[in-house]
Length: 152
Image (cartoon, rainbow, N blue to C red; front, side, top):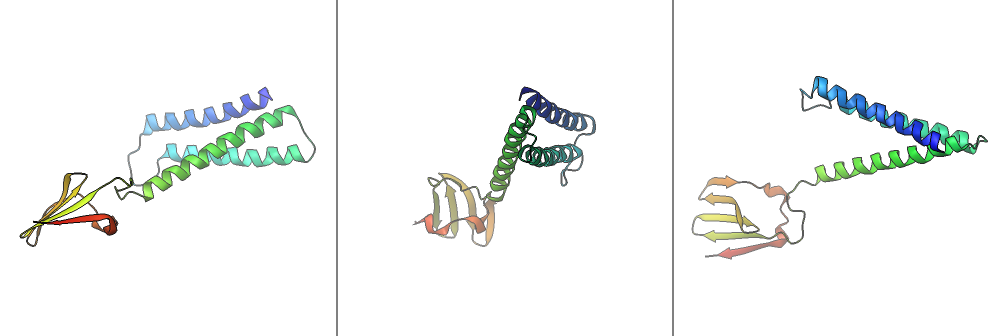
């Protein structure tokens, strides 16, 4: 089992070292697309997932060796870790409203021609007559049911 574990760890180590070297040498000049290091990491984990499928098939069709068992456990742990990490990243980037906690408090204060919106006591939006002077908030992502209005 140790040989399978070491072989799998060596595979991922080589892939991640190559990704690190490509980032160190080439950098990430165009930030709107994945860099070479991202592609190397993705290919490393796709290759690991394919290796997991092949090793599992071999293990359950008759070749039950300790080496295959170590490969399966290591590849399964790495594949599940990668998938969970990607799900976490994708969920965090799609929910970027800025109001994630339930204890976030939004208050709108209206005084004459001035409207001020506060988020946890800090002004994030100021409007005087028709001119918006300060706007640090995406008003389309505000849950308007939890907003307190104060008229002065």
